[in-house]
Length: 143
Image (cartoon, rainbow, N blue to C red; front, side):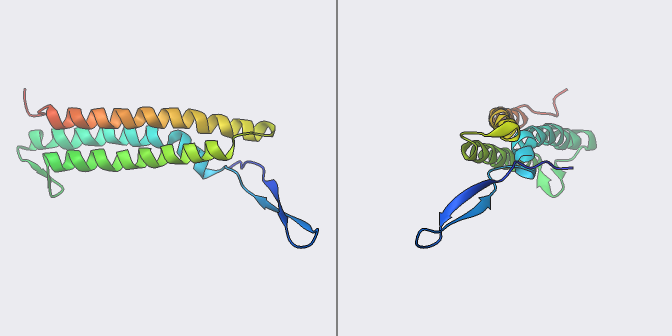
């Protein structure tokens, strides 16, 4: 069950002296969960898959996995999760900006999720970059 942030009415002037309220959604649902957990999930997948696809060629005695060389696999498995983590960070920043002045418990909670998500996504981006450097520089086939 997905909880959504309550909609705030936006006042729009329709004509001479008329005001019409149209609801707009500030933040909520999938975007908040992606902002909060997207970077961490991307880092986890990077950590597991990047090392798997650099260790696998050593065990199989060949240097091509899924049609890419070891360095190609490391590059793809660093860039793709990095892009996902950056998108999660941008989503968190956008949600935080939309909730500058939260009203009510749900919006305070959503603001908290966006803020913590932004920090976690920044950390995940750093870990993905440093993990990519480690995968690229440490030779997995040395025993």
